[in-house]
Length: 465
Image 1 (cartoon, helix red, strand yellow):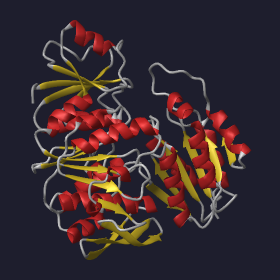
Image 2 (cartoon, one colour):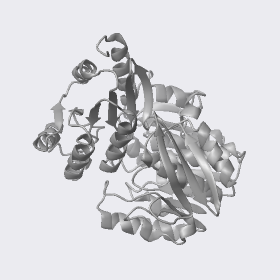
Image 3 (tube, helix red, strand yellow):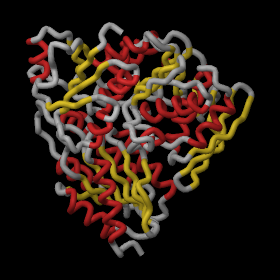
Image 4 (tube, helix red, strand yellow):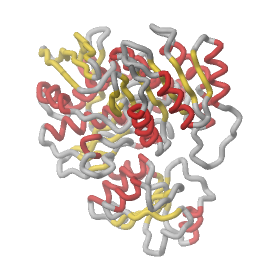
């Protein structure tokens, strides 16, 4: 690596913290700042536990000893840390550029797609770990098995040759990577229109040096396939074909037919979309040299991802699920997964993420919510709170009430509830045995705590009968 002393602006963010931890574990000096600086922040405490100190975003953490300042697309030019770095003539590097440099030091597996990246990246790492490969990991969400050890769980510097990364399309940075193994899970309108995304994924596919794993069932993804032997899906012949899908409460089981073999997969996560995720992960692991049966067996001990259809708990027959779903495809998959284990109604809560993304995807968000909530029951409920605003420059020309108005016209039982505490009260009052409370939203670091509050309020309630 070119530098020894790095400073990350926005170090507590999911993408930045992963690289920061990886470098710290490799004995580089790492510090950073955060817009929401607080000495009580659990994320910042966990970073400090790995010798990554967090400063306020006011330039105070950058000094003449700082050799490189790392930024993401979200950091604006007038940020005080940027101004301080320029004043001291310190090089400024985008996180994708730094990650690309890191990948040149490892054999890399890069997971791309508009949905499922974090889950599949985590699954691949878990399988390689199970196969005693000691892989490294840089991803956008903490793995539950790693969180239990007291770390954030999204960045690990392993001793083996493989590095598994999440390749992000939202800022176009996936074109920077040249992995040995690449995966394209799906390609749906999210952040960018389909034609623009196609060009990005085309470059990613061309940059993949060896094996390209592709979703052969997905309309826009399958065009990038090089070899049907490395496709996954269930609608036709693929090298990793999923058959005999079964949902059993919040677990799924299915079989993978591949290379003349048939292996069973049982994994403790819900939803047909997780069968696709598991197929992709198994294919990537096999491409990396792991035995097919070993890869399938590993997923029995898969612990899931932070806020990816995470079961918070169950009270008197009411389940509480916390999910990162925020784009149309993820919302549909999340609600559909709940249908598999919910004999009663789904009580959904959704916090849209960002004014620009909400406006860009307004029609698709409304369609996804309506189609999933109106099948098979008209009794499903939806509460929508205010759009999450993380700071920075934004045009506030859309509101959650606009979405609710659109949804009500389609017959959805949708209610605009700006106050979270009121939303909790309303959801708990409507919950009865057999129902599922599904909480959806992204980026907001308080959402995990919100899910816990919903669960605790449910425990204190006597309405679940």
